[in-house]
Length: 83
Image (cartoon, rainbow, N blue to C red; front, side):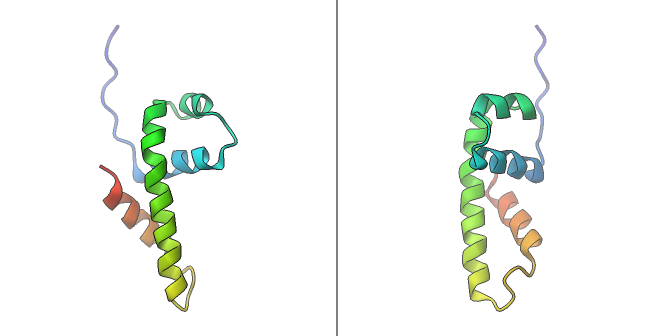
């Protein structure tokens, strides 16, 4: 059996998978099969998304424009947290 080559997942993909896990509409096994990743990866990515989202809401509550620059902030912080 040949080894699968190492894959690099984009931060957007990781966020998408982690948000699906946070929603809880599917089991970890179903998510793993749907996104073709190991369940341990999903488990590792989920806390990062929770931290990033919480920090974004904390930062936006201080500003006058609640969602200005939301997408740039999310992608920048998510990339900085991921190994």
